[in-house]
Length: 281
Image (tube, rainbow, N blue to C red):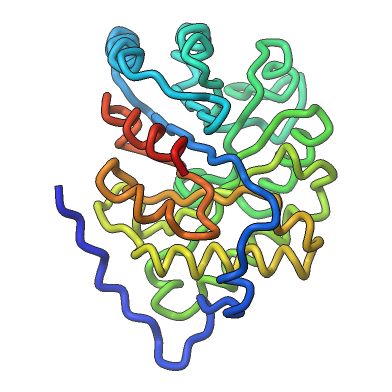
């Protein structure tokens, strides 16, 4: 399938996506292991379908010493498929985590549950949580702080809407979403950042490799200033937004793209092609 990049104009004179040239082109001082996430969202409808998908994945092995793979099933499916995921060298990840602890919080699960169930990862701040369920920057900060204290690894999602991109506010939005959580992070080894332009999620539109690289490099430059050069260099930044086996290699070739957070394509057998492309990076 031939996906064309979206016709998203960059405002005249906008510098929101332009990192310093030296930083964007500098070779990585330390190799960053690629990481691929598969976010199933509220899919599939039946457990049997999830098990059939895992059966198809098993037919194509990958080297988990060269690429980390975390899969985010629905909360109901996760405990059932966890063992099969781990047998393939993948890790299980929840799609959300509570901002509260144990107690009278109907419908929630928290970091203590994850630790007890030996689930190492969770997503925080996905745009669908922010937009559809009113999750604020402050809430994401509370969730991330709880995860840091418990030793739960986090894929922290950031990204701008189409309106924000067209207004030249990509950099501003990403900085705002990161600034809220930076004071809560004490162990950067447990943090992965996923940059997901909201306008590219599930739309078939993909940021061009150059657009994605510019934004990733800008995020890394911001972390260099706000945290440290060491953290900026070592933290892994995924790209998310209509990633497919057909477009992943060109995106991954960019200096500051360290893997992907994949939605719809992670519900297909060919998701394994994205993983194997990353292990060769």
